[in-house]
Structure formats: C-alpha cells, structure tokens
Length: 105
Image 1 (spheres, one colour):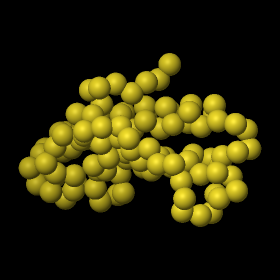
Image 2 (cartoon, helix red, strand yellow):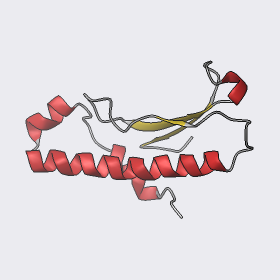
Image 3 (tube, rainbow, N blue to C red):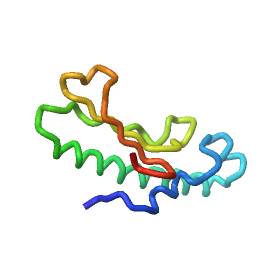
C-alpha cells in the first residue's frame, strides 16, 4: 500500500522554489536530484489520492484532479488535489486536499 509519511513534509522545507534561482546556486546534478525527490513524493501523493477516489461511491464524484508537482517554472511549495461531485464537475466548489511543509489538510 502506498502511504504518506512524515518525512514527505520535509520536501517543502527549502527557501527557494523557482527553477531559475535554484539553478543559480546548485549544480545541474543537484537540480536533477531535487526534481527527482519532488517528483517521487508527488507520485505517492497522486497514488494516495487516486486510491481514495477509487473508494468513493461510484458515479457520485468526478475524476479527482491532482495538481502537477511543477508548473514548468517552479517547484510547487505544496501538493494539491481536488474532489468534485459529478453534478458539479465544471464548477469551483470542491473538497480540496493539500500537503505542505507543515500539514496535511
């Protein structure tokens, strides 16, 4: 079973999330390693949310949306997933789940 662990919160314990600024102070190997670490934690985050979504009542909820681990320019300073009722799939109201450096909410 895939599970969130306490050490996953540490991925967000850094001062910079901008790739441009990270590249100014880290070697290409360190940047690649950091990306892999962020992506690995995100893969667990995604799997946990997909597992939760698969256990919800069939037809009640739309497909869970798991925000990417990067926006292309920056690493995320949190991971986010949203659950919407199927009848409100195209609207803003949702149940949001977030993992950041301090908590899971």
